Image (cartoon, rainbow, N blue to C red):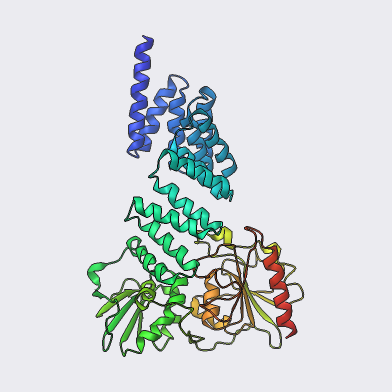
Length: 474
């Protein structure tokens, strides 16, 4: 009779596992509840824990799998699920502990070493992460994820040759792995290798959805004399501001330029005399050629270190702001990177750290739309309100200096040739060429201060403070 009961439970467990594999979470949960009606079962709790991870109910997931572990602490799979739940709620200290417990039971599971390495990476324990990724590769030499993250970790450690080699190994295993090519390209660009960088960066197009049936022939350098070129902005505001300068050069070929961009950018771009028409992403006017805006650099083989650039390259009408105080030092500030950025935390600075820097200055204007009167720090005297990029640009144009982290504002200020102090982490976005310590080949009005130690902004903030005093004292 007991054997029949055990067989029934096994059948229900298998049924629940099959439902889980098909993402039929309600059915899987009902199967587990049926099992648990007959008594506690570690596998049923484990399956429920996995369901809760998919449903992003991480605390419930942890509670369920802890019941599994209490009943059976020799199953590595339970600890792996516990680690994944902690990792999902960004408690990486506890996820490390869970994955290490799994490996104590069975050290031959490559994916667990990989998960452990990723948790170490999130904790910026890069040497531990590297060790775990190599353990992964020893067990699974073709583990592309481990090679990819090795490349990312080596880049964070400024070991760019090792980073490039890791991305190349990833590509060797999977030649069409677009993310690996893109990461390789961004690493090349970061170290100033623009030829290889632009070429590999082109792989990003594999990751972009385009309405090919609405597009004419791609522009790859053909003559544009008396032609119409549709430029697609790829829905990145930073890239749009960064690359739009080169449409001026294309315009010299006596062509018509149509720019497709997001609504926030349209009024600003419509003021550029060298852009004939600005449309949203739903419209595809008649054109002879099209080009993704990020591909122009590859077509032109452009190297900012070798080509002359003119500033400002954005042209806007003046609109006086009542935020500006005459005969005063008007400072615009941004301390948080764009919230949709994957590197938000690394690029952002705690506002409390900035308080001493701005002490004694009368007009500190916050340029971040996400800051309101309710959450503004005391050093901020005014908060800018604007509906689109043009209004932000009109305000920036009137400022004496902009102090910012890596944010759209840095590109706008650079494009307008406004005195700008840019605060960057140890390893920044690809646009901020590591060969230029305190300057940028892309924007001549930018002065850059970079972290010396990952996560430590004290050196940067000291430099900013001294620079503001120099500007104030003229």
